[in-house]
Length: 233
Length: 245
Image 1 (cartoon, rainbow over the protein chains, first blue to last red):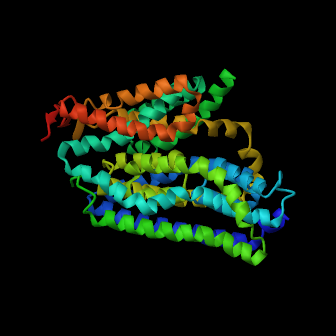
Image 2: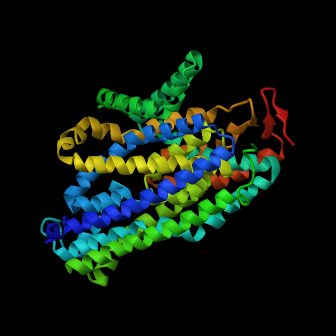
Image 3: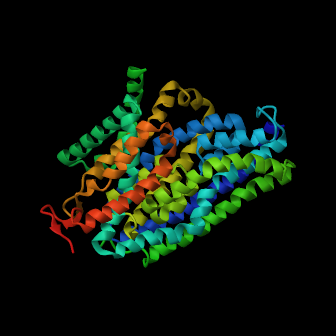
């Protein structure tokens, strides 16, 4: 049966090995990037701030991944959910892919599905999510070095580089203005909190406040969203 | 140090691309090795027909989105894209982390300094996420009632507006002590108009944001080029806005 094979120790071991591989990749990358930034004149203090800020900001979104793990593990078992949410995946896609793998085997519930269905689910979830990273392996380097070539073109390179983030904000920000009052108020509150933190950091000379700007905005913004959602429900 | 130096010749950027590609390939191979080994040992191989039947609809839904994410976010993430895409959650975790890191060390995207900042931030972010997931797994039973409460469910829904609210402010303002772009905010005007019109007239637009970002990039580059050529958008230096040649 599905859950007889979905929770066996071997799968924990295999997932653990894969995740350890990714951690090694991240650790080597961090070491090399740290060295490069030091050579570039970034001080140890600034580097420590960057590391702290990145780690602390990552906590809240990671907790939302844990919430996803709770729901996904109920469907496909803990070890495969752990693996899928640690590498590439996100809970919405993984739930959809798992259901499609199961339906392809002719079942309508994981609880009644066969052991082979678990095999199908593993392959379907892997194949469905793999495209982005395969594309980057093949085309990532020429694509990104192509963007970098624009840098050679004097002041145009500087303007060109700013276009990508501008374009992204131009699509995402207007969405919060038309998606309803809770989205808009959460967005505006986070913006005001960021402004307040920047102001306080400058006024009091407490630079550490600036390092946690993103983390503070996220936590307070999300808490306020619950209040706004209650007000407008 | 000049933070607008070209990345193409930088040894660090070359290393980051080579390492990222090789390691991503190793992970891709492992992703397939894992179910293969497991199915072989536990005798639960599915038929090729069932795998294809399950994969086709999900691939049709997910692959175009994955392509648009790669095209939209890799110009900002640079050579940290490999690690960012391998560990996932690009939009709500890796991208904000990268933008924040570039701002903290005063770096531009597509420069060695910008790439290194993104790579360091996203490496730390990835390791933090892995640790929290392991912790979540260990504490799964006691945590379940708290994390599945309505409070957490609502708060998680509004994570992105909270992140963007914080990031957009740093983006709208420019540090005028160094090099900055005069009339920078004119560049996204056509894209903003396009986005507003689409959101108001087409419900599907919210599901098509990945594609919209690609279109927005093209429009922004063309419009920026016109404004730069006509001298409306200029690269300047210092608070008094001295033109840069």
